[in-house]
Length: 232
Ligand SMILES: Nc1ncnc2c1ncn2[C@@H]1O[C@H](COP(=O)(O)OP(=O)(O)O)[C@@H](O)[C@H]1O
Ligand SMILES: Cc1ncc(COP(=O)(O)O)c(N)n1
Image (cartoon, rainbow, N blue to C red; front, side, top):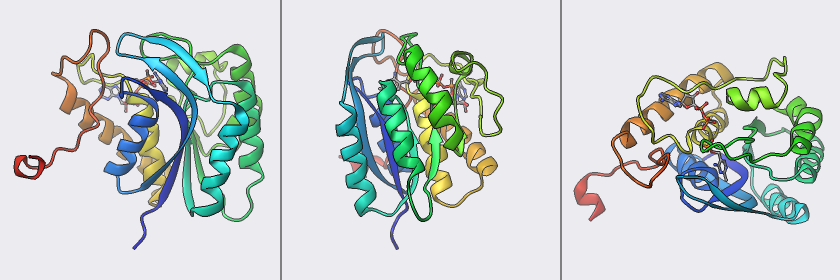
């Protein structure tokens, strides 16, 4: 039987903690086929974001069209969108989809765990006007919820850390929204999918809580360890 297909529309993180790396590894863990549309390349590590190179909006749309024209997409997750043009054009493309619309999870990546601002005021305005209204679920953290002007919308699910003591939490927001999209693609309702996504992130945070990778906020684990004999 075919696995459900989920697309992430997001940026890369050279440190492998957040963005596309987090999304595709989460999809693989949760039994969905992951496709990816890259919106920006970041030079980033556990201590912060050094540089951002946005992918031109036409190239973002070309990637998305290639996926949507060929694969039966059950769900889409958006992460870092990098430019207001990308937010607006993407929203128009998604709104115009015919047939059964994929479930849409919008993680409005505006502030990184390191504190770096990843979305300008123009990006915020474009989210509010174009993307939030068509999402099934929007998953801002507290800072992003504030940046968006605390929208009073039924589809907004504000995420708030948790009680696992760890500094290895870089990539948790991406992992959480990807897990939510994967569970929706499997057909779960929103409340169940959200609860399962919380549990999935907690499991991964447990795996990485004692790691000492990098000098800053280390990565949440993307591993799903096989037994030692299966690995090497
Ligand atoms: N320390 C933690 N303990 C348990 N769960 C956590 C922790 N940090 C994050 N999570 C889980 O990850 C989700 C996203 O976390 P959040 O800190 O809001 O993400 P980000 O700030 O990276 O966007 C939370 O809703 C929660 O389910
Ligand atoms: C490319 C990219 N996408 C998203 C995030 C946010 O992730 P986090 O909130 O865990 O820093 C990030 N730092 N980089």
